[in-house]
Length: 343
Image (cartoon, rainbow, N blue to C red; front, side, top):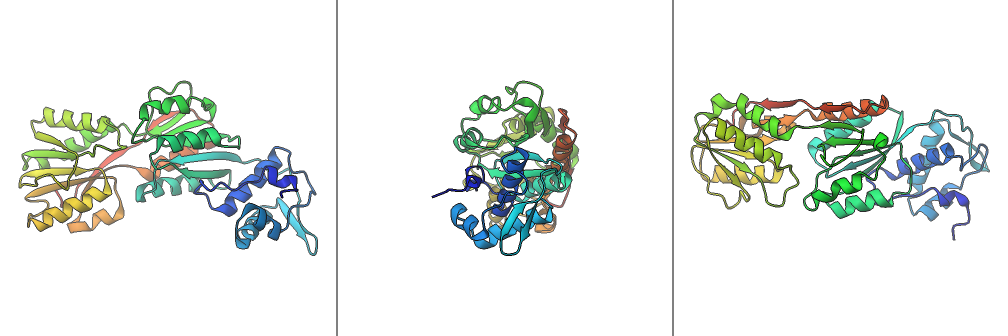
């Protein structure tokens, strides 16, 4: 039975991607900030912490060791740990919600955390493009955060997203990667302009694309990608008189010489390249390939895969800067074409 009131406000969230020792650290800092833990109060032992919170002893010890490094708690041999100071600079507390984990999302996360430095405690969640899980995470969170940073991409029920997001006080909200038109009020945003971005990127590659007759955009039916990408693709093809087609399943689509394929999903790129090679078609001469989202490995695949991509590092660092400055700006992130041998 939990007898120590400490455990009424210190919790570990199994849904969070944040390491458990940092969850413990953030929870203690928040409890001190809210006056629930006062100076000189004794804290549960490492063994008790491990048992009640159901974490490893190493996790509990690492959490206390980090708090001790911050100068917030101290220990007395034979007696245990206690709160040594409550007058530390109060950190910003951030609930960070990503729609998925991927190589480029890691770039966003790393830049975000690096720019924040030690001035913020971040609880990190991934909802896997699932609206119901997203809604549950927002509505069931126990802590009052200073900021909510959300990447709002959903496979289904995306029309309901604004209803949930509008429940968050706008002075605490930052939308990342994509704006939601129905979200009201004065909030911060760091976003891509999907329709305009793909149009201008393809326009920059127009000379290379001119040796092909058909452009195909691989856009799966069950996709979280914004449909503005399709609008920008159609606009470009109509403007420059390219035959064009929307492909829902690249595993079944006939592949012919003179076509360019634009893929959004990393799995689709693997399937596409495997099929092109099996047909003995030469990438960059007989068939063109353009891939969304720049990653280092694409520089080396088949002498280089052409990519169109936002600046993910810029996205993460800009979002962190807006939080540190308490800014409500809306900032469009740069978008680039990286021409390589695949076209």
